[in-house]
Image (tube, rainbow, N blue to C red; front, top):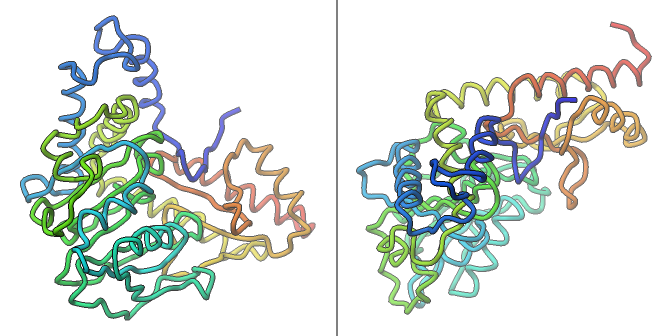
Amino acid sequence: MKKHNYSAGPCILPQEVFEKSAAAILDFNHSGLSILEISHRSKDFIAVMDEARALALDLLGLTGKGYQALFLSSGASLEFLMVPYNLMKVDGKAAYLDTGTWANNAITEAKAFGETVIVASSKNDNYTHIPKDYVIPTDADYFHCTSNNTIFGTQMKSFPKTDIPLVCDMSSDIFSRVIDFTQFDLIYAGAQKNMGPAGTTLVVVKESILGKTGRSLPSILDYQKHIKAESMYNTPPVFPIYVSLLTMQWLKEKGGVAAIEIENNAKAALLYTEIDRNPYFIGTVNQEDRSNMNATFLLEDEAHTPVFDALWKEAGISGITGHRSVGGYRASMYNALPIESVQVLVDVMQDFEKKVSGTKF
């Protein structure tokens, strides 16, 4: 049976990416060696790294605009630490928007470095919306926000204008929609949400904002050292970077971010229309802030959970249970999820309605 993978991360990837990466495990570039065993200093992998960094900038429309792309070890959670290390001045301060669990975790790390101002938070409303009309202090060293909140299912549809560096965690919606990426000074994203397997993180940074903190940085946490070493300061996660390259190549061949945004809008519209129409489901966040990547919803009556769960499992759907901290359901519709899979979920929801109501239509 075909599986319909709604996992929030590690995420669904294109079938052709699986096929190409599987072939490379056996024999990479006809070298007689596996991608898992080649030297990261080999010309074959240096070519992978160079293309991956260049293609990331190309897809974001940042080529030749003073940005550097890095593929670093670990996940985006390490960037919660690296951002204040590299951007918050000694005795300085930073401003943060609190829109969910990961934003809150980033705030926790920043507090270890200096004054950390939370300009707004939707925590008291269980993160069901994106705060609006907040004021960013002009004397902060940077402003940090999270574009998409995987756990709670909210997404920023616009970003504030500010004269201080704008930093954004785009882990769960990178490459999914057209944005003027030049408004950001630093973007980071864990690969496992929409780009590749777990194990590497993309960082895109405007080089001119670095080296101004007055801090002595540990070398491994210094963006400037990683830039100088072209993401080779230490042994990089070779396989995750290679799979991320394959995924970006797939996206480029489809027409880039503009083309995939059309598909993502169609998928989100299909599912949210059913959530709003069907009396047995309840959307959990404000409609204006709904995420196109992660749709979160509840059953109107939890007593029907066994019936609904049996139906979606029978249909080959995987990974739609909500995060353990909030419950309910979460359908993650990342770039590689086909609209046909969304239709399967919608059909299941309609079948559930018929079964529970006894209605034939």
